[in-house]
Amino acid sequence: MSMPSNEPSKLIVPGRTPAPSGPRQLHLANAGGTVQRTVTVSPPRTDPGFYQRLIGRLNPLRQTSRLAMAMSGIGVAALALDVAATLNLGNPFLFHDRRERWKEMSGLLEGSRSDLWRSYFDEIAPHWKGHAVRMLQTYIRFNVNVLYGQLGKISDEMSGTMQSQYKEVLEYDLSVFGLYATSAPVLRALTASSAHPIGRVALMTQVGLFMSAVGNLVKQFADVYNSYEGDLNKLELKLNDLKGAFYRSGNPDLGPRDLHLSPSIEAPGQIDDNWIPA
Amino acid sequence: MKEVTAFGQGGEGDLPGLLREVESWLGSLTGALEEMREVRLEGTDSTGVVRAEVSGVGRLVGLSIDPRGLRDLDHVELAEAVRAAIVAAHLAMGERLTEVTGGLAGPTSGDDPLDSHVRNVLRGD
Image (tube, rainbow over all chains, first blue to last red; front, side, top):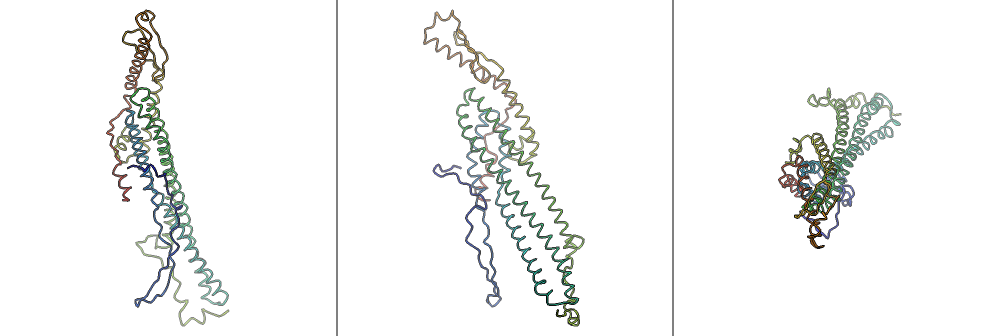
């Protein structure tokens, strides 16, 4: 893998690429081909290739560093650390994409909740009274609104966690790349003089410094990873709470809870009693 | 060095274990280099007239010339003798370095165990 010498290093960070051409329209047609409804959909997010570019740019630097480690005669641990540092590099786009999806979901939930809320308070509450209105209000206030709230909250938290993970993965990627980019030229120069004992001492010292820096990065990332494991575990517990709200005994195998309004609200025989004009 | 071997072969192992092993290894390297800083190695030219002393990291710390040998050497030969003594001292230093750091060496094939991983990423797999 070689890097074209006339091409400046360029790493495109997810989310900082030019936005794809605006939203597109989706036309939903019936069996006869007549358009029944048109919805606007956001364009799919595409991976800007940051991770691929990172690996592509990093690999020549790794090879230089690995050669230096091997030439130092003491590089066995450094070579292992190089493998660990490289394998822990991740694609931040995956987290960026999830952050956006959870954010969109949160927005959709809040939009739907508001639609329902406003529909009731603008269209029904001022114009009707009677048993149905009370039943509807109770349903909206204490059932739908609470569930929407819980779903929205967990979507927000998921989006926030994905953002944090995106940031950490990106920071780690860039730190590892930066370390190799600054160390490789020094290691290359020292490798060239390693046939002389003084050059070999200098190379060993530099390999030791490099390893120390890589080790610190990997350790910090491992600590961050463990910390996010904790956050994800908390989110999983909250999702369990949600399961309890949507499934019988919180167990999807036992089927969903009945969250519908009582059919009596529109029973023809009770219309006049249930729905009284205000 | 169980984890060093596992990761060195491109496998995944216990990361905290690897970091512990690397830390211990770095301690040994630092110790070896400290030891090298303290030692003094000598070298002489083929006639034994010039004696050079270097530190374990290669700094020239002493140079002595036997006055009796000066009668047989002109200025060019003396310069050559000084150079030869320093080279000999550095060779001794190299041998000591190999000895001191011998325990830190390990089998290194030179192949990159992540070669296929890198190729897969670049192919977009």
